Amino acid sequence: MSNHTRVTHFILRGFSDAPQLRLVVVLFFLLVYTFGLLGNISIITAVMRDSRLHSPMYFFLKNLSFLDMCYTSATIPKAVVISFTGSGVISYLECVAQLYIFITLSATECFLLTAMAYDRFLAILRPLLYGTIMSQKCCAELVACAWVSGAIYSAFHTFNTFSLPYCGPNVIEHFFCDIPPVMRLSCTDYHLNEEVGFAVSSCIVMSSFALTVLSYAGIVSTVVRIPSVDGRWKAFSTCSSHLTTVILFYGTGSFVYLRPASRYSPTQGPLASIFYSVLTPSLNPVVYCLRNKDMKFALQKLYSGMKY
Image (cartoon, rainbow, N blue to C red):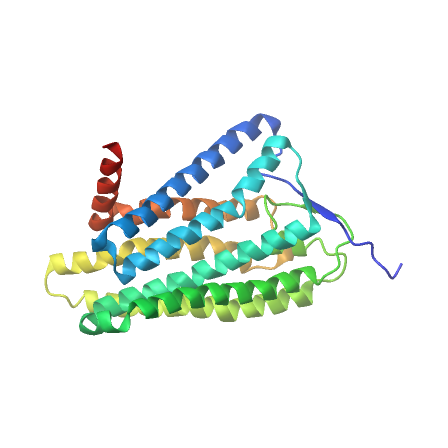
């Protein structure tokens, strides 16, 4: 037959196939999701209410927290419902929408982390010009650019993935619609689409990562020349939280996306995805608050004010 019958829906596998583990897994991810939401909402509220946090660094952090809330909300609620009910049916168009939203948020976070690295680079290497360069307008433009770039990047990958015909099987070995597990279900040869997608991802994402690395190379070379130990520690502490997030985000994300879809593992793929799509955005509030005295004080002030 030359014509293929296009699938109308896919079936997501959820977090676990074992019925005895399903409730435990659902409760765990609900706990992580709720923790992440409360943490990110707290950061956004604290930054908006505390005038001492009205600086470019916290403006970016506020936007990162909002992005992380959207990021986890794009996958976890649907996955929890699937695991709880045991029905993983997702329509074709819903799968397209979920993949587009997820890749948009993922790419936007990539670009936003680069903007945050550039912000720290200017703050440490050009402190006298920092306030002039990183104006409110400049910060807003960088955030807007990250969102627009993420949306365009995602539109390409969504088209590249779903321009392939899908005529069965339709079981996605994942808890959400993602590029590698979806693409490998195509009933035609998908390697050209895979190679084109890989080339685009390598050029754009790795360029963004390279700019982040260069920013930190400049920061480190400047920090080590600071004569006082306290000065070096203070300068490094402002960057350590962001650097931790960068390492977690790129480290786990590259494990999934920088290898062929044919080598996608139904076990390792979802496990790595849990780290970069669930745990990292949910734990970012903890990472940013552990070593940031101003943020810790602002949160203490926020919660103490709620008691009275």
